[in-house]
Image (cartoon, rainbow, N blue to C red; front, side):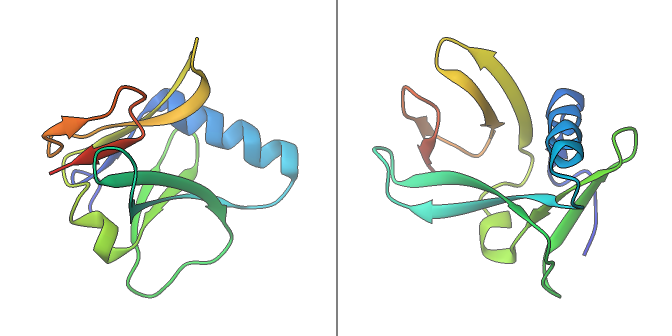
Length: 113
C-alpha cells in the first residue's frame, strides 16, 4: 500500500535517514510504530529495517531516495502525521507532529487519542 498524503516524511528527516543509511552502507528503511505505554498512553517508536511486510504502508521520499515504513495497526494512529527530525536540548531525534493526538507528553514521545 502506498499513498504519500496519509503520512509525510519531512525533508529534514529524509536527509537524516539518508545520511544514516549511507554511513551504514546498507539499504535500510525507517520504520515508525506505535506501542502501548508512556505517560500519555501510546508511544512512538523508530527503528531501521531491511525488511518489508506485505501489508506495510510505504512512503517514499523522492529527493532523498528513502522510505518510511508503517505497519497497518500503527498507521491508524498516524493518519495526517508528519515525521520530522530535530536537534535541540532534548538531543537529536525523530519526532512526530500528529494532528490526531489529543494529549502529548512533555517530551513528545508519547500521546493519546
